[in-house]
Amino acid sequence: MQIHLRYFASVREALATGAETLSTSATTLAQLRDELIARGGVYAQVLARGRAVRMALDQEMSGEDAVLRDGCEVAFFPPVTGG
Image (cartoon, rainbow, N blue to C red; front, side, top):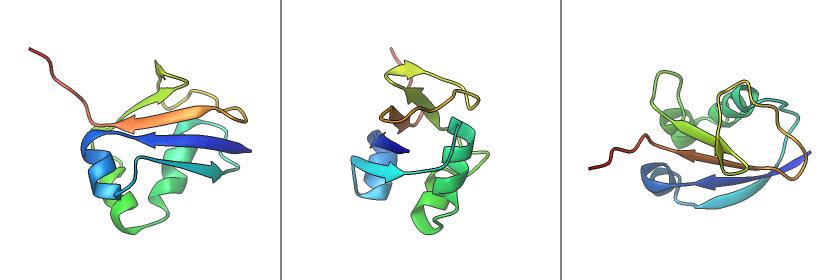
């Protein structure tokens, strides 16, 4: 399936890209994150387990058990604080 990835803030800066389209066999956000970590390098550093990374599926904050579908949009970003 094809999905659209968007990266924000420090994640975007580290990966040096704001978006990409990916062909994946992942069915959940957890599997997708693991697939990206397996790329190694900066992906493994930025998205590593234990790092605080938030995810949204089709512009809705989602947990790692959220189910992906063809054509969906997944966003990765660091936690944010407000004031």
